[in-house]
Length: 150
Image 1 (cartoon, helix red, strand yellow):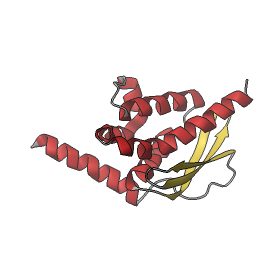
Image 2 (image 1 turned 180 degrees about the vertical axis):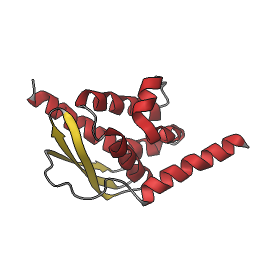
Image 3 (image 1 turned 180 degrees about the horizontal axis):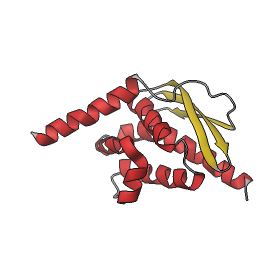
Image 4 (image 1 turned 30 degrees about the vertical axis):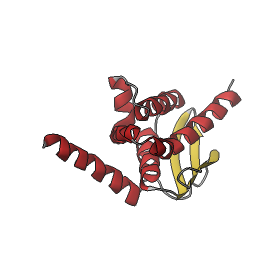
């Protein structure tokens, strides 16, 4: 019974972020932008990031997609705004491991915040791409920023 209640709570968190995504819209003064597409589900998002002094000052996304892709992007933005690039890279890697069913550390778990509720997508392989779309976009943006600073 308790597990069923926990699953229901997780579903509610995902639905809340999917229906009322945080950080949705256009970002003024963005320093980076990337368009991402998931052909499996039809998710399309444009991720805009403002990075100042090696920290993410803001993240916004727009586009259309399934509840899981919107919820994941919303949770990602909620957790990573204000964090330094290195921390965000670790979080993106940890999220990828999480949804693939790999074990993550307690520290990585804390970095992901509410996004840990998306661990259940590992049971639905087609949904992994939905959940990781925004995170992969952010990882690509951060890799480009890293290349510029080398």
